[in-house]
Length: 313
Ligand SMILES: Cc1cc2nc3c(=O)[nH]c(=O)nc-3n(C[C@H](O)[C@H](O)[C@H](O)COP(=O)(O)OP(=O)(O)OC[C@H]3O[C@@H](n4cnc5c(N)ncnc54)[C@H](O)[C@@H]3O)c2cc1C
Image (tube, rainbow, N blue to C red):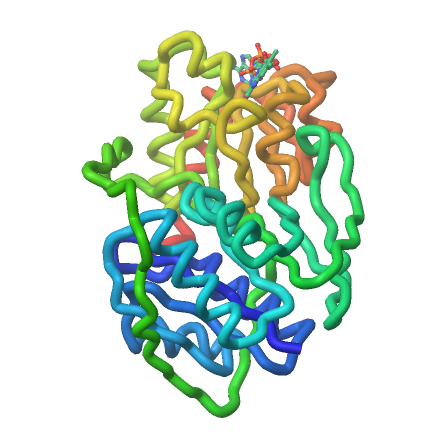
């Protein structure tokens, strides 16, 4: 059975989820194709080393959901892919529906695990009801799956490496990207971060973000926030984690002065390690925390930052 994964390039870099998809596909298939639109041979090497057998390069550099959907459709058909894996990112979500409609395939979004996959059927595991529960879903092939970033372990793979070039037409494109407002600048973006330090109402005011930002800088982490902090006008909405913000799944999520409301947990509950710093021992966040620290964050976070600085040269 052949599986097609679709890589994603952002600012000239291969997004990590692209390699996760190659690894996830490798676990269920002995023939893994990856479509790389706008990438180069170095990106292809990264994909080979994490699971791909064949990287199909396409030179299109400008994103449009129609063009990406058309090219992915053509390659999926050509490779007779029974399962197509896309990143569950803003971009992947944008054209996954279009692709599944063109392929007449079932679509399951935001999966965190592929339980099994065959020519006929795929079984996947995904959060439902804003992360309050997990569901196992069976879908008949062909299937398009969007996969939550940071949910898949990276494998080391070696084998024959083939690069093909696709010259398939981008087809009819009626909408074009004209501008990107990259608010957030050079800071680590939430969706890409393997560590997130997040602040809630407990940080008391915007003048205290530098305490968390310093820890972010030390750890190479992204800065997140609860809706309470966003609604108070302390930080822009693009930092919000939760049901009405971003869904993240970092290796480590450090929640500072966040109570752990269900709507916040919906956005970060699948983090691998959750560290909660809260001065209320009964705060609900401690129910999901891997490590719970009952402390005043203004006392604890600077100490943590100083200690990390000593070990991270
Ligand atoms: C439809 C809907 C959608 C929503 N979507 C989201 C969403 O996407 N994201 C989201 O976050 N929320 C969302 N909410 C809001 C959510 O219900 C909570 O109100 C919000 O998450 C609370 O934010 P908080 O934990 O920062 O504040 P609080 O609940 O007020 O908690 C603050 C915490 O800080 C602790 N604290 C105070 N001082 C200190 C200190 N010095 N040191 C350490 N700890 C301290 C307190 O003990 C407390 O636990 C949504 C709500 C609704 C109804």
